[in-house]
Length: 302
Length: 153
Image (cartoon, rainbow over all chains, first blue to last red; front, side, top):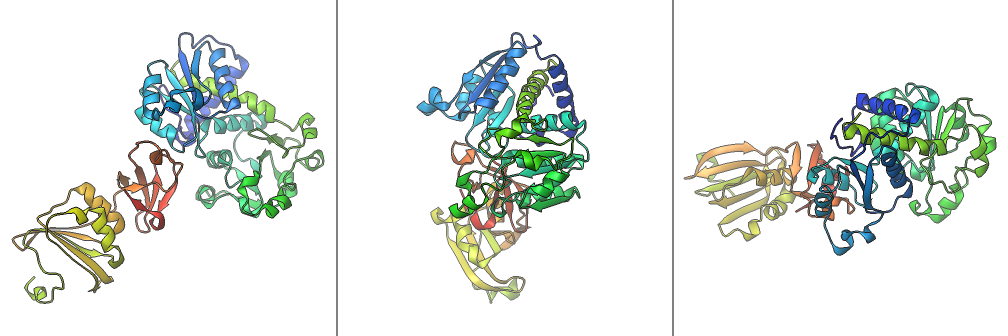
């Protein structure tokens, strides 16, 4: 996978994804390794994203690489009107690999076409965020011991949540059964469902959480944003219907784990945090290992 | 040729290109796509003409102009049924069917206002996912541009 860009999750084959998950396991066992000594990683965040950026920088630092970059476009030459192409061409002189987050859809693909060094997409607008998908897959495999034949429930905003779309598509390679819980206005779009149907997998749709929680091995929670609703009354009506609390977890299977891409607002009550089923902070930790695996394999040292 | 000439609604040309079987409602779009409004040569066209095959059709005849394949791609999107006929000395030299290509470059605008191609100087590229109803998937933002919201560049 040396020099291979990661722009969308499907740029990597199932075998390559597995190799990354295995490598991430290795880094979880031994997170500090001086294998990227002398390498420079650029983190170009044209829009702020604390978690993703810190987790990439942590991954790079733990492997001995140096990190350069900016944390939002206000502090970069973009403010002076520089094009993305010029920024990428310039920075590629200073770094061996570029990690970028950009507000425009498709910006990462474009950057990878003009860049002489490999690009890792850390989120391009509402389009792709493949490292999130990989860390979600890692968290699922780690907690369930496998990715095959699992019952995965997605709850909340399934229409606009790009993490849900990418993870759904990635899981269709693993005979997943999908339980989709959302208000009517925020159902999973048909272009994503098409991928489920193409693989002849089952999916069930619900407007309330109870049944899905009973069946799930993985409960993937997402935030419902007020601005997604055309009718504010409809938002008020549904906003409390998708809040996970202790009582709801009483009916869950023992092996069930709760995932959330974070940041959480109120869709998971804080009382759930202490429950052994709550896995979302560990999930965030796993992000460092998967990003170590990516940096190491794309830079060709693993 | 002889037996149809007496019925021609749009006169024959001596040299140039005939674009036939254009969907009647798209004739003006084809004219715009090919920048024929700026062309200095003689142009004859007709629309809402009778067609055995399609009911109605449009036709454009451009004297002394022969088109590059990139330009023909543009026609394919607005007029997938069009046939292109090259004429020299009133004779048909070459006849070909317009075909919608597998990828479309530099012809259509991406429908997504947040797409990088609408915000930086990036040449648009699309994968054609449906050649009949014309659905184009942007190779950058992955959003679908459909016939109903297609804007030509």
